[in-house]
Length: 442
Image 1 (cartoon, helix red, strand yellow):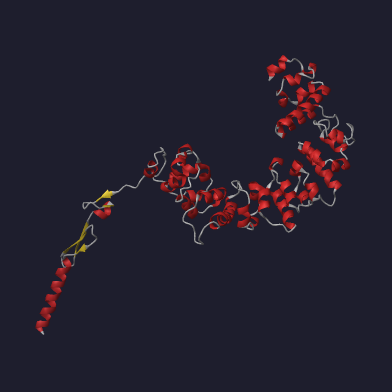
Image 2 (image 1 turned 30 degrees about the vertical axis):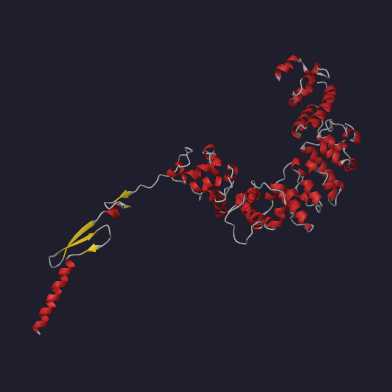
């Protein structure tokens, strides 16, 4: 880049064609460079260049960067000016591809009337890429509509809506599914969890419920931002009719709320009996796959016996406490002969390492993947009879004791566990002799 700039000499001497010779480098020009260029020529270039970038589908953030750097280079000397000194914003300026490049945020605020904003809202919001400008639009809309924004106005907010506070949202009308869908366009940016809650609160306040169209509007990230209590109101039929929802960003608790609903929608509903299924078909697996992060241990074991050939990403997305309970044979059956090889690729993954540490190394060796870090197999011994067992149980122990009569008692315990006491028979014989002698004396 610097070689090209050096070759083209000082920016102040550039002609209208010079920036085009440097294409696509103008995407990365800083404010210092724009400041050195002739403003009139630079503006003409930017107007055409931005139009070309839009046509080519260049991301908004890159167009935003060009506008921001040019505006910073030619910022008005008095940012605090409260009067419009650049010229009132009309439909002519708005239709300019470079709009609002001639207006810093202060002048944008001063030169944009409420009437022009209301009459050209979608065109303005489509060209405004900077947050401070978006904030101006929201503040002016609150002035224009003191009783709150209607559904029709909310639908035209586009990316500007992301600057709204929860207090702003509380004043919006969100009663139609079209309004909710327009707010949830992922291309307009992300919502915070609090913002999503505020939006759904307004939607539910209009006696709306979460049906399949709402789920499709929310998408996976939107669903994950809902509270667990709201998620519990989702019906299995709504989930069944909705598009697949990627809910990997949900917390584990929310995944556990969604899974039984998905199980009822895609497994139990398609089962020919009311009893729990012992296997899962490939079609059923594909339908419920995005919800498996909340699956129970018993269901995962059912999948292991169903030859679903789970991919490694889905496996790593399972509840970690469930993964910990799976044996080597369970995981091999779950992943299938092909996908199980991915364990070697992901052997440094924390979840895989934790699972490996809970397995016997001899079991891991059966996979033939070179996985290490498993537990040692317990050592075993063999007694003289060829029976495996501990040395303590295999060996006989003998103790001796001296009786009061001077007799020695041998107490021997063999491996069979029987205790032999020879002296006890002598006591019985002596006792019988004494009793017999006493009987004869009588």
